[in-house]
Image 1 (cartoon, rainbow, N blue to C red):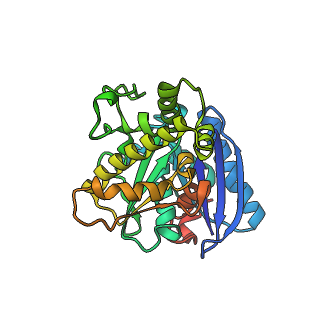
Image 2: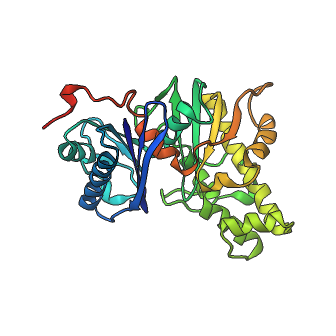
Length: 307
């Protein structure tokens, strides 16, 4: 049995997968806003899952940041109470077994590459379009964290081929302006709509209005698709993945993958385009499933089960 935990800013989700990927049990709880509370909550979910299933499993954890191999400490986490903390070793001490940690976007990509929309593809780019914009890379079934642990962080590149009215671009929390995240995140989408219409609508309202033919909302969607296509074209030019899987709340827009697919050939540096852009298969459970798949097998070796 494989246990996956997804540590989010507002919720922590736990799942147990059978060897074939079937969900045995799944739980969600609110995320404590402090480090010790987060550690205890993760451990409590593992214990609850094992108590309910009557089985002991491997544990993988997806985190909103990266883990520095030299120190084991978390960095670049938007859940700031995790930064600088030895989350992995603290969980191992409580759970009495090894624990594997990975960036949550990589977990999303791994889930979709293992038994999701990208199953069977050699090079997978998993996209998170939500409150922020991130990405993860899977090559031949394994996550590619990168030398600096930032592989796939396309959201903090500048939006490519900007027009004059897109300069200098919105301010980003990273300290720069015009980042892809500042345009393509949910808040960025709403801000762009407000700039052009003076309507303070959220993403769902904009999408609904466009479906009913509202001209301003339709124009906002067109700009979003155009910017997403430009941004993904730069990913294809660099990484040349076999497939791009869209995830996060913004990916739920109707026909988003199809609309981007139509535009990409004119943006990519190639006379052919075989890269597919597809919706995800596992929805908002994809990240937690990917955390479980960090272990090739859910069976613990005797030396992994510590007193």
